[in-house]
Every structure is written in C-alpha cells, then in structure tokens.
Length: 98
Image 1: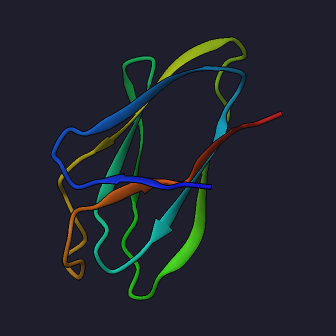
Image 2: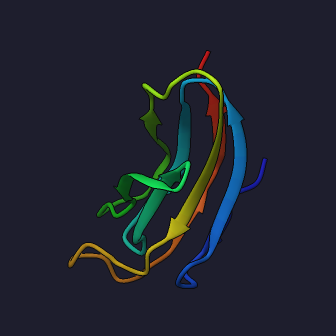
C-alpha cells in the first residue's frame, strides 16, 4: 500500500531474489528520472520512468535469469530524459516471477 521514492544520486534498494526474474512496478511521470537495475553486480537494465502524464503502476519485467539466488539492486542514476523536470525514481512493488 505504499510507494518508496528518491531523487538522491545513488539511492538504492537491494534485495535477494530466488528465481528466474521479477516484475518491477513504478510510477511513470513528468518528474521521473532513470533507474539502473543491477543483478549479481552486473548492469541488467536502465529503466526510464519519465512520462508526459502520470501512469500509476507501470511495469517492467526482468526475466531469463539462471534459476537460483540473486542479489538485486535498483538505483537512482540521477539521469533523466531531456523532457523530464526531475530525477525521482520510485518502487511500488517487486514481484518474483513464477
């Protein structure tokens, strides 16, 4: 029932994951920046959370990981789309893939 957000450079959430992937749910909005997804110390993706209108519960899926334990971090890059007017990233939820 909550959303965590930050625009601090290097702010992150880190967690352990058992499985082959996860679904990252966030808010797409005009004041959003870019989030880096790092898995097992390797950059897996950069997600641009910018959108000209607010979209609640936008999602991206990270899949295809080898089965087993993984260490995941989602970090604020303090980078943004040129149209964005902020650097915020947020996390609404993280759902492991079956």
